Length: 156
Image 1 (cartoon, rainbow, N blue to C red):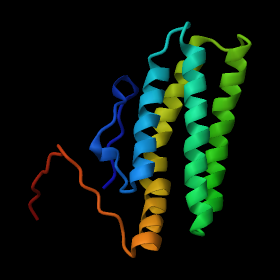
Image 2 (cartoon, helix red, strand yellow):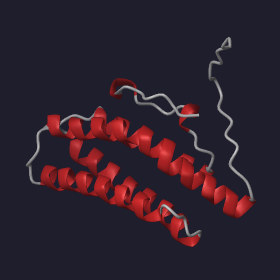
Image 3 (cartoon, rainbow, N blue to C red):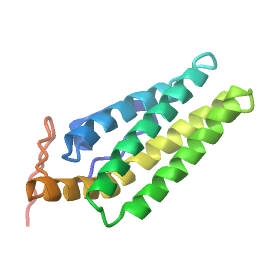
C-alpha cells in the first residue's frame, strides 16, 4: 500500500509510511522529523537544521547501503545513485548556507523537494529493499500493520 503524499505544511509521521523493516522505518521516522524541522526553520535555525538533515541522511543511507551490500540487493546501484544525488543536493545547500550563500527561501525549497521526493523513494526503492531484506533473513515478505487507516468499501 502506498502512502499518500503529505503537503509540506503537514509533513508528519504516520503509519502509512511504514515499509515493514524496523530499522529503516525508524530511520524514516527520524527523516520526517528532521525534514519537518528544516521546513519550519527560521534564519537563525536554518544552519543547524541543514546539518541535522545532512547528518541524518549520511547515517541513514549508510545503513541502507550496508544492507544492500551484505545481502546482494539487485537494485543496489540504482538505489545508491539516488542516495548520492540527494546527498549532493543537500550538501551543496548546506555548504552554501555555511558561508551565507543561500536565502531562507532556498532552504525551504530544499525541504519541500525532500518532502516531495520521499514518498516515491520509500514506496518503491525502500519497500523493495525491505522485501529483499525480509526474504533473505526470514524467508518471506514483510508484514506491515498500519494503525488508524480508514478502510473504504468498494462495490464491484
